[in-house]
Length: 157
Length: 129
Image (cartoon, rainbow over all chains, first blue to last red; front, top):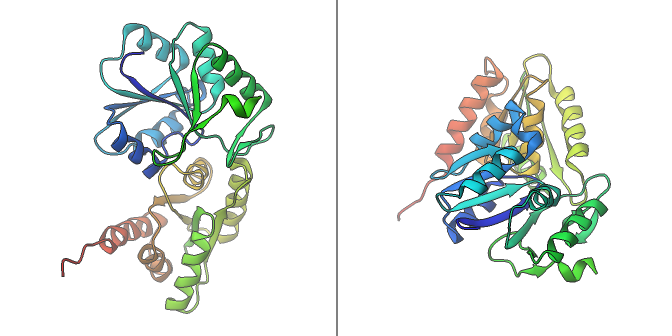
């Protein structure tokens, strides 16, 4: 998708200096947070807006709002941030075309099991990743830009 | 007395707490909590709530977290919904020391938060020697 320069899964969303490091590698103008729960939680919206690194616009979008913006076309270099691969699967099922997914943070939570180092995923999330990979999406784990890229397809075998 | 809780990934908060005790002597009313690998954010939130309840003697608790957007920071933000807390990010020794020295005299947890934020901004400086 044109101007979607990073589609990242990180359940912490905007993670301080980690996001700043990505912005140095890929200087996006906007961070689109896509999450239905966060979009309707005024308190979390405020926390996220206040967490924005300087010089970049942050927007909080529901899945439907994000889909509308994707169909209209992104006007400037954009990072999309989601909390779970399930959000990406939902958007892909609705017709969004993604080339690549970056897995940057999926913490331990009830129902999740370790996938790679400190990245964990539930069975449902693993299935969502498998489906994305089957659709030809390039799914890789890379927490910070300096880190070696790990292919997820081989971890899900 | 206003309570102060240092929050971090791993043992940073514990180490800063230890260093504050070395410099300031006692550190009553100051506590720390670190997120360890494998701990869920739900569990961390419960641990923070228990510490906040312990530290709150009616004037509230200042939560100093290590990094904006990190799991300890996100969990600290959750406290704001129900507890009388103020939240800062960017924990360093100068901030923790200021918090420890001023928590007994500050009029409110907000005043303390503003003083510690200012201290944090002042502690980072390049010395062009």
